[in-house]
Image (cartoon, rainbow, N blue to C red):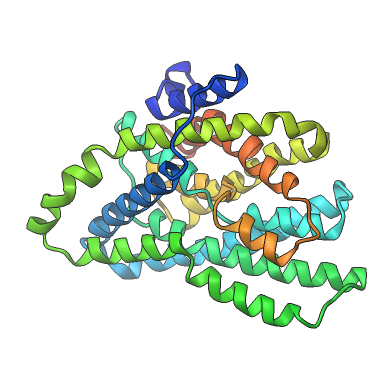
Length: 326
């Protein structure tokens, strides 16, 4: 992995945001700007993926769907076992943290897209389907793990069933998922002439908006640095090792099962290695109020996200190249 692979504007803006927080700069973004840019980026990803899918065989997308479900179900279970058996973390905190690591980070995925675009590497359209799918299974597995944890702790509650039903419904009607699937559908059905009218807004300035988003995320990650003492050495190590475990399975499935190009394998690996910081935290806050939010928020925003953005993505790309014999 060369130093030049890190000199991508998106990654550098993330580092700038984190640096601004570390030196206690008065740099701040408007409160609602983050939500606006996230909406814009999700629509841009969905439109681009939908347009690419319109010229693809949808039957070829099924393996990506199965892979996404496998990641969403399998990775939280692996994370839970590691946290409980090796880390001796209490069941409810382990369940809450685990759900984050079966889900995905749209920010990490977008950074990977920017990275590949910066070095001129193409990729398949199917990983965007995986991005849209992986959020819900991880939340459901988190709910199952929470129920199991309460059972072994003798704290099961009668009202859990109604709350779980509400959360399961929310997992499928989540705004991020709706935007992705809806934008993909629009991108797939609009004509080329119609798409070209909106292309400058959603394609040409996409990378610039991503840089602003990552500068904001860099400041958010910087705020979490002071909480590492509370989280503990094991959990900090887990926040780095768990993405690598996910990346290992992502590389294997992306290369051997899905048979994607180097760019496609890189994106699949990034999805498997990422950790949610948008959809899962509020779901776990509602489902497992006993869990400590500083644990899973510090791990997702202060540890795993920076690791993936700065070190993980270039490393996953290098590993995909190695598997492809390049």
